[in-house]
Length: 196
Image (cartoon, rainbow, N blue to C red; front, top):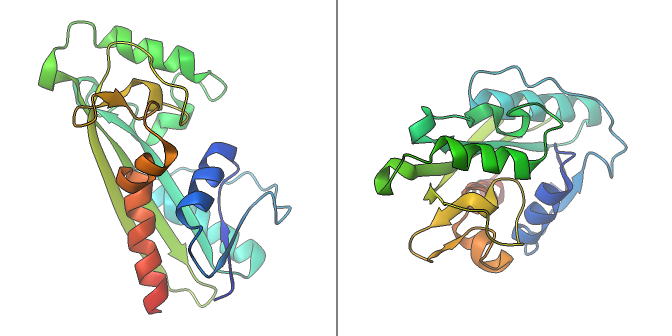
């Protein structure tokens, strides 16, 4: 396996993925680098279903192995929201400052453990021969009381990591990639690919 297409158009996500896979001896390219402009409808009911939908579509379009992830934030106080709708939460074009402030406001009565949350990432690999593999990573934390940090993207500035005393937007990319949901899922997938 020389080349894998990663089914994402999210620049922040592809940057993070390439950093995590920098020691990997397989070339990882984005949909943009492959000139794929298809709008793949994520209509699954779970992270796993959405991840497989994207990987299957991109593998079919390119004839190459395809990786796809579906990831999101689950806030216990909000009954698991935004969950699989994390990117589309409060509207597809709503900026993350608005989304983050909205979540903080919704949790204004929540204290301590009531603020528990996690980032979930499911990564799927679909091979041109039809074989499919799925790996999952989880990063536990809490929703912070304010937006903090310049690193990361999305919900990172409100995702507080008690063991660091910081949000995931305040720790370095290197630190985050070691402990993140995406880092864990990609590491597991890397091992799987090496064994194929």
